[in-house]
Image (cartoon, rainbow, N blue to C red; front, side, top):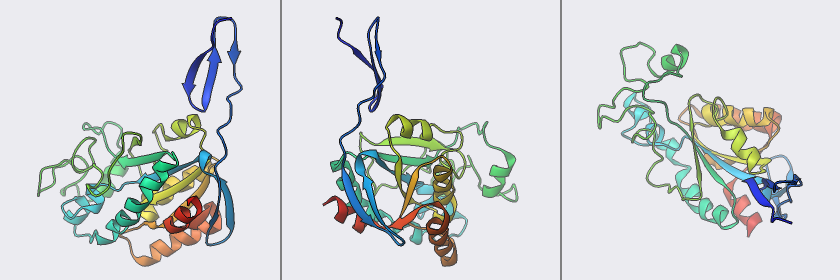
Length: 254
């Protein structure tokens, strides 16, 4: 009998030859931890979990980026950097996938609607999507530009997964859902900015798609008023999942 060949990405793998197709998809070994949250003590499987980091990029978090250019204080958006620096090596150590979901538009903006353009340039006369930033000429939120790059304090590992998004939700018109399902992930931790905008809409869509959602409070921030952040925590707890923090997750792993 011929040796069966693997097709797919583990754990979503078939094993096949000319006469057979094994569709059993052997399960991943359990990595069970307990995690305290604001509302319940969770028991979860790290082997079925992933971390989704949203928009920790220069245009939103750097003093020379787009938000700072329009007069926004970006210092709150930088507060997730330090806890993420501590958390990421530990998650990579237990082989939890890290997914960087960043706003990175096509240079021609062919898939961007006037409604999306209006958010970034409401008068039509300012610096909006694709326009060069005055301080360094980087085009606002364009894929492969400085503006769309992850801040230099956070390192993307070769094992990490990078996904470009084009709306506030990281699931809209992107391969994020397909990648997570191929990887067999059902529990998603969320981090990044802005909590009440791109993080929240991505988390909501994840909930609607059937994922378990856990927002990491200390790894999430916003440049909006504090009541927006508190409303985000409230809504996640009330409707969409759970709120915990990176120190609790690290303690559960260790």
